[in-house]
Every structure is written in structure tokens, then in C-alpha cells.
Amino acid sequence: MTHLKKTSGTEARTRYKWVVLIVGMFAQASTSTFFVGLAAIGPALRHAEGLSLGELGILLGAPMAGFVMTLLLWGAATDRFDERPVMAVGLAATAYFLVLTSSVSGLWPLSLCLALAGAAAASVNAASGRAVLRWFPRERRGFAMGLRQTSVPLGAAAAALMLPTMVAGWGIGFAFRSLAAVAMMAAVSSWIWIREPPQDHEFGTAGTIEARVKEPDNERRNRQRALRNVIVAGVALVMCQATFVSFVVEMLHGHRGLTLRSASLVFAVAQLTGAGARVLVGSWSDNVPDRLMPLRVVAFGMAAGGASLGLAVDGPLPLLVVLSVIVGAFVICWNGLAFTVAGELAPPGRMGTTLGLQSTANFLVAGVTPYCVGTFIAFAGFSAGFGFIAVPAAAAGLLLVRIHRRARDGVTVHEQEMSS
Image (cartoon, rainbow, N blue to C red; front, side, top):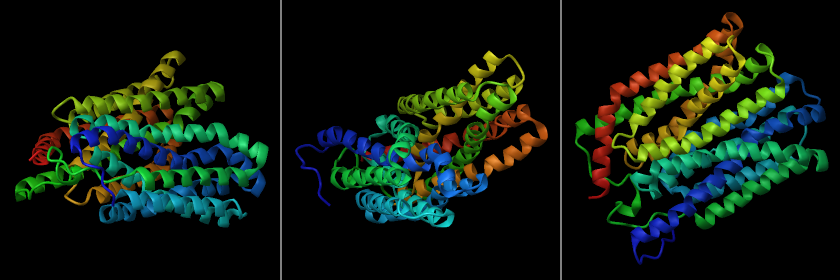
């Protein structure tokens, strides 16, 4: 693979890391356009194909089903072949299957093509995260990963704005071909601009944060234990996020009587606030010696916010709206930071696999939580349902308190080895 010209490895990294971040964000946004944004043309798909609501749910869930099944495989492929070929091949395959989607009809052919597109697009998740983690030094890594994670809601928002207009003017097939064109542009961009970090004495062999000397057995065990617990804590926080995202609009509209437009606006503001908070939390973690500390604060803040929101469900409407935005920011902002911590704790040569495993666990839990919590809300009411957010959030915070010293020591050793 072509390396950067080495007048100065540190200067090259400083200049080029932003290119890697921008390309990674574009690649991630290109996949979220149909993972999340496809719901924007759900009514058109239902009308064109004569689908029931349940069948539409199958169709819209197909990309995520394919995505979850291949995350771990793509992560392992990234460790084996590096980010550039994995992202380029995966995105090119995504474009192909989206073009194929535009030429078929019927529930099961469409679902199969979208599932294959999702399976191919999963290549971006671990690979782009690994690229950002390897290029950015410790003191900017949290900020960079937080910024990368904003590409998901931004891509979804762009799709929600553009896809209905495309369908109205040129049809559903044109919308899918447009999504394919965006994915292909991301594939070409990845092939051209995603590169290996320069070999640099300050940042380690080939600039990778995985380059370190063999750890003593006790430190390796502590690191592995910390990594497992960080992933478990992330799963608990995903439960909170899935609960809020799935039911806040229904609670504000169906239970409290806000218009659907107003309830959706509250949800949108919460999403945008959460996206901004991802960057702020990541930047905060870059400026403290213990990167787990901001994650603990977010978890306990989420627990307090969830409990307050549960109590406010039947209270004054202005208070409920404000709390919904605040809790929304908490449940959305933690994701990039958790990925950063997991990447820093990953075993040598296994960062892509680790990020793939973490994403797989998160998406699986996010998939089953709405059904479980929805059933609980039907039995116990919205107040109990949103109050439930406090339980897994507090559990995650307590778990992070328990492991923070071991995880901090592991990351400290890790950073010392990077500069050796």
C-alpha cells in the first residue's frame, strides 16, 4: 500500500488525519442514508408494493438484519487486510445491491437485496472507526470519534429531506439508484484517500495504537476484563437509547396530545443536541487522564434524567418537553466515546474485530429492546417505561466505576508503549 512521503511523519499525520476523518464520515453517512433514511419513503414503498404495515416493517428492517450478520466478519477482515480495501470493496458492493434493488419488486426480492446491501455496508462501521483511531493521537481521538459519529444522524437527515422529493419526481427506482451513486462515490473516495498512517517514532510502528510490546499477563488480563465490561456497559446504554428513540414521539403525541409535527420537532432537536454532545463529550475525554470518567458521568446523568423523565410524563408539558431534549442528548452522546475506549483497549491486531463485536452486541440489543419495552409500556404505562431508562444507565455507571482503575491503568500503559 502506498505510504505518505516522509519528510516528517508527525507533520504528515497532522495534515492528513483530517482527510481520513472526512472520508470516514462521508462513508458512514452514505450507509446511514438507507439504514435510517429509507423510512422516509416508507409510505411510497408500501403503496407501490401493496404492503401491509407488518410487511413494510420487514422491508425496512432488512438492511439492519444484513448489517448485524456481517459486522464481526468485516471487523476481522479489516484487521487482516486494513481499512482501504475493506471500505472500498464493501461500499462498491453496497452500490451494486442498491442498483439491483431498483430493478426488482415484491416484498421478498426487495428485502433480500436490501439485506445484502446492509451486509456489504457493514464494512464501513469497524473499518472507518479503526482508521480514525489509528490516525489520531490520544489527545484528539475522542473528539475525532465523536465527530465521526455525527455522520449517522446527518446522513439520515439528508436522506429524509431528499428521498421523498426524488420519489415524487422520478420514482422509487431513481431514489435507490441515487443511494447507489452516493455509496459508489464513498467507495472511490475510500480507495483514493484512506491510507496507512506514516511510520512515526512518536506514535508507534505505522502510527497504529495497536503497536505495543508484549504486556505482562496480569496487565493483559486486566485490559481484557476492562474491555468486556466496557462492552457490557455499552449494551446497557444502548437499551436506554433504543427506549427513548422508539417511544418519545409516541409518548408526546399519543399520550400527551402534542401534534405529530411538534412531537417530531422535539425528537429532531434532541437528536441534533445529542449529535453535538457526542463531539463535546469526546473532546472532554481527550483532556482528562481517565477517558472512562466522562462515560461514567454520562451514564449517571442518563440515570438521573431517565428517572426525572419518568416522573414528568404526566406533569407540566413544557417541563416534559425540556426534559425530553435533555435526556435525548444524554442517551445519544455516549456512543463515540464508548467506541474510542473499546478501540484503545483492543488486543494487538484485533481492533477491527473488537469494534465489530461491540457494534454487533449494540445492534442486537437495540433490535430487541423496543419490543420488550413496548410490551412493558402497554402493561405499566409511559411513566414506568421511561423511568426504566434509569435502571440500565445506573447499572452501566456502577460497572464503569468498578472497572475504571483497571481500564485507566491499561490505557496508560498502552499510551506509554505507543511513545516508546
